[in-house]
Image (cartoon, rainbow over all chains, first blue to last red):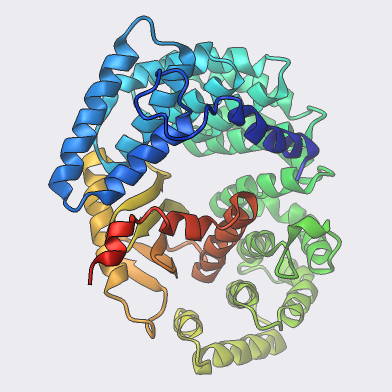
Length: 362
Length: 114
């Protein structure tokens, strides 16, 4: 994990603790009770209720209080942040709180770092792609993308990759392309994710930056490379012939992952980057379909993946499943097929019910 | 693609919900109620993957908490199953004892009930 994120995450509990004024203040001054204790109190009281009817009454009362607080002109941004957290909770339980949406946008615009974080979170949860208030967010995002504060840039990029109006893509596209060359890997990674989102909602607008995606694929940071794989999976799904030349690169990357060349952080129960392997196997499957020459390149690495995934853990079964699926999709080779069939046999005969399901799925 | 991620307790109260595509608020509660009904009616011998409407549910039980992920047919179910476990491990490491803390939100009165 990048050191910027590590430092931010370790500093956050300390910063949040500054708002704490001790437990059990109940009716004490509104600005002094911490956000977590008010939300915690609300959650506990909801859990304590026996019936749905009582829950509805309590939430309606809470929503009325919140409506009054957010609309009051004297409400500080700190208090607004606290209200926003409770509004998110109420919406999650299924009670609409649309009066709070505009205040969420305002919070993201005007707040300091922590308030901005809550504001952006609220916006990404409350609003959806076609919401009319989303356009108001664009200015804030543009401003934050140009900020010198890395955390603000990260937050803006996260929101862009979650929810952004299609019509405003041209406004932010140059800024995000810029971020692809940023020195911090977390920003490059988030920029790739934002561009992936743009590719999904408006593919014609990102046609011109395909070679920048290639650069991301060869990036020295694993996170950035992993993010670019999502884009490639989508692009290969739509047009596999355009990317056959990248087969070699994907095979090399998979070899390196399976061979344990990644940093140890990526190990999950001593399996190197399993979801990463699965993603690569999917891409290779699509590239090798009905193409003997491309499939030739993959046989070795598929063989090795099959061999390495012998450990008895659910995640290795997931990798094996994906491996076998890839073997069946690409141009067939008899001994590979034999190994794959043995694998399926083991799944179906296994006492574990989940594995039987996987075996049946073929 | 992951469509939604839910954490629901045995009583059917939603602890956490995250939707990755737009679902109307009113529809969400019905969806959650049906999903948890499907998961609670499963026995221990049945597998963790259920077919529900046009997606699959992958669920995992941790004490009194159910974590349910709705996926479409392009996803590897076992990979998502382990992703849930990875998520819980990360939460546990970062917040320590997360599952037991969520359980402790059950009030003392419920322990007195027969």
